[in-house]
Amino acid sequence: MASMSIVRVDGVGKSFRGLRALSDVDFEVAEGEILGIIGPNGAGKTTLFNVVSGALAPDTGRVAFAGQDVTGRAPDRIARAGMVRTFQLMRPFSSMTVLENVCLAAQHHRFGRRKLREHSLEVVERVGLGPWAHRAAPELPTAGLKRLELARALAMRPKVLLLDEVLAGLVPAEREPVLDLLARLREEEGVTLLFIEHIMAAVMRLADRVLVLDQGRVIAVGSPQEVTSDARVIDAYLGEEPTHADA
Image (cartoon, rainbow, N blue to C red):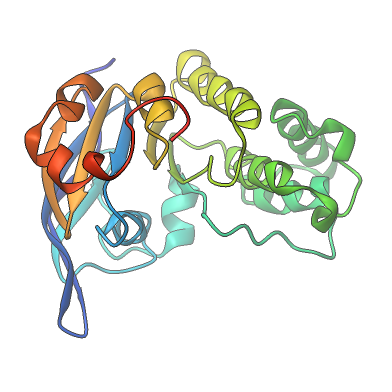
């Protein structure tokens, strides 16, 4: 893991109608690192992703990407710069095929038509959707829609990938290929990953470090082993579900 920080969050706070969703959130992610983000429902995880990716401007604090202040910058500008996110609720363009959805995501590279199609088809194949490439996106099962969401993000050639519960709704057999793909992205291409996840088996397997949010605050950061043995984390989160197997 490289020592250079590629994502830095300093003192980020966000409120909605007086409800404090994030309070003084600080953390850094090294280039090539995999950071898991966990916490109970309502802890502020998705709000944090929304702030980091530009969907929401923070009330306080700063977000830096690759040494540049991107606080409040438009999401499309942040994505074009190389920090791309997926969404828990998949919304592909229903009138398009799987390949067309991925081509649309890749257009910001300004490829020629042939190169655009080649690149997009390569991504489709990589996520295991080759046989579905020319099928309408709504025909995909849940596992396929998850892969399509990941494919659209990968088509943008991210340096940093923010994954919001990419495994949600998948059975164990469907999770394994996705986890393998994410591990390869880091190992083969050096992609930095930040992923929100409730499935602790996946967090333990994939993450270098884990950040724990509770009521909008960071209550722990450390290796998966350190975090899962932290009394504050057990009390706030892990006490309500198993930390391994298929939780």
